[in-house]
Image (cartoon, rainbow, N blue to C red; front, side, top):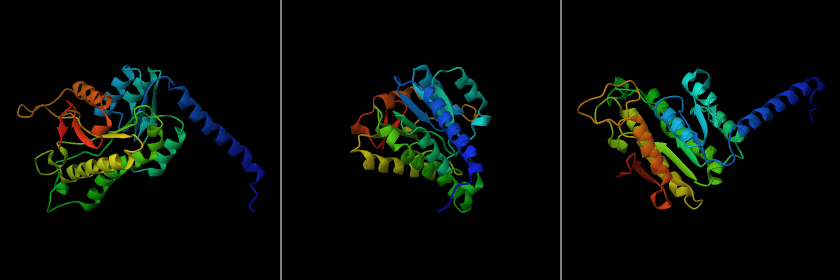
Length: 266
């Protein structure tokens, strides 16, 4: 039997108190009377717009990103809000995801919104004939495996909520999106996510959990220039539309992919 040396006890007590204080601080920032959304990739673009719109609607917002310390705009926004907290989720760090779920173990999450992902291209390593297989694994770990881990980790939080909704963002129209070379890893990893969402819907339908894959449309979030030959959607309009899809989702629609304007995608 190992006896803990007394000289380590004060350190252990301090760490325990600090951990408990962090949990209390997070919990006190959230209203018991409001619905709660947890958003990944919340520091910019679509994720940040979701944060702003849900906060404006009076929701609790758990806004997560890979590196909160450098999320200046998100932190500045959260500092002015009563019920927005910023947390870390790195989709490659499964232990960290579990730790955050443990921190919020008693917090119902009405909407779990898997928005974070890896997107780049066109590039040679994403073209058949010159595929970069290390990048292939990275794309799948971030865009498919990571969101699945988040859904598994926060399953109990979603289950104990009122809305019981898990959503994830896809690209294009499933595997048919971005009809040009150089995006194969991104497109196929998102197609894998679409399939995973369908499997989650089947697995947890009896628990009353609604699962939807959302298509935001062509939103210019990476500094792209508008293309007169391709219709783009203002980011606030896209997010507002997806929030409406989430709000009106019912069990007959679970497992489906739905565009921001309510169109069902086959």
